[in-house]
Image (tube, rainbow, N blue to C red):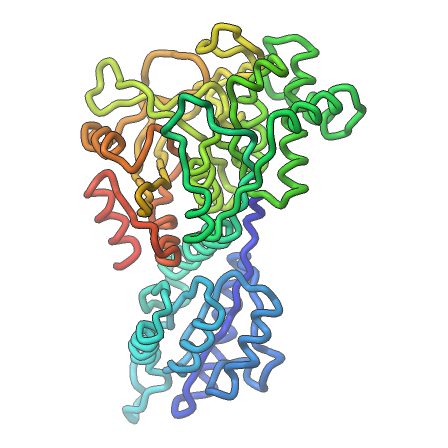
Length: 472
């Protein structure tokens, strides 16, 4: 599961020749801002009498404390000029996303003296971080009460969540890819070597056996899921089918939890239909809703994408796994996003149906039929071949279009022919992960800490807008 909990190591810093009193004042103001934004952090209050990172003597105690706390990110506000070498040593040792920022300096005092020179310290620390090859995020020098500061903090925490979940990615692979789907090939060894991403494979027999046992059991999770389906969906299949869907969802959830997986990739057809006469779409939808994203057709790269996107959303809205499918019949830049039914039920424009898919001749139960709400959505795809990896990214807006089957949304992009060409030419494929809102700045910032994954924007205007957000 993706828990969306990010623990920040809060390491305010100062240099001895500037005002201690002002540094302590800003240390407190910044901590209060973190608390008001509900950002969980570990401070330095018990390490020295100031609770500040001041010099070389403070470095090892700070590293030890943050390592023991298992921080997911590091925040180094320069409460006055700061100790650039100490900051860089801590950041390099921890190897977590690092935010560099300092409060905007006030005017010099009446006698011409200055209390902090925080901005100058930021210049120094940035250079030393580069010398020590430490990637970092920089939030422009501004006041504690500025919206820019709050927005930047929240974006950084979300990006750190992406990095945390990517680095601990362990994907439950349920059976092999469908035989005809060569597009779903991946290099398991390379994913482990380059990124530390692990796959935990089980076969269809293991899954089917557990589902059958759960159907006949009095398992509380199965019962809860059956009731949830009846309360939240228009059920167009039999009572027995509903229980089978609930048992499938529960079996997948149990396997993921037992093997410490934060995503699933499942062979959704056609072995499952032969064994259980069931589609997994609704089960996939419910698991994704609960923070365990599921990718169809044993799409490992799709599962990795969904981990990153779900983490970027910080639990505020779930992701949804899509096919780029067909062009809009009238809008030249319109395209159908669709799949047989794995999209979270909370996204439905109207009450979702638990039904049967249109695309398979045996029409097994378990798919979902629902148009989802539109608005602005972000679309991402992590993929690679030949040892090179990238993230295709861009935004789209929901538009009106003809009704169809499965879970779907018609969208408009700035230049469809460019998107189409980028997918055909690769390394990307027809699958993507969507989420409501503009999450491009969060994912782009997270890529700072994921060497070997380049950013590919499908629209130059969206790229420039993202850069403007991050580097204004």
